[in-house]
Length: 126
Image 1 (cartoon, rainbow, N blue to C red):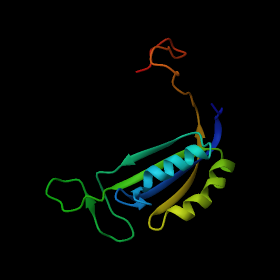
Image 2 (image 1 turned 90 degrees about the vertical axis):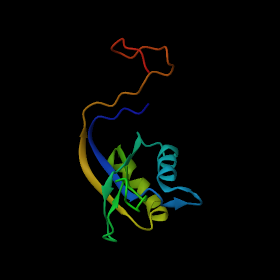
Image 3 (image 1 turned 60 degrees about the vertical axis):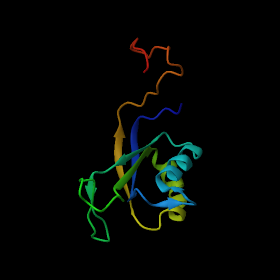
Image 4 (image 1 turned 180 degrees about the vertical axis):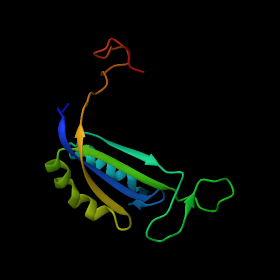
């Protein structure tokens, strides 16, 4: 596991849940490419309501016709590694928003390898 503490860069990609890359979800392709690039981690967050450049509101409310909910993919790593990953996003993201923000990593600790292994605090992984 890569040690990551101190100054870092947070990359956030805002797209629609229905956006695809070669017939699979775009958010999945971005996460897999981030993993292949060796970035520290990536998480996908599904929004319950939002709008973007199209000004069309997407919502999860029951009677809404919209199902293309907003999705945010968040990656945090060193500035050098995040900036090296940006050309891949140029290839993948046709419509959406990509932001970069400086941040500080206070703690970055992975889970134990097996389900029965304890973490440093002596607690079992779930």
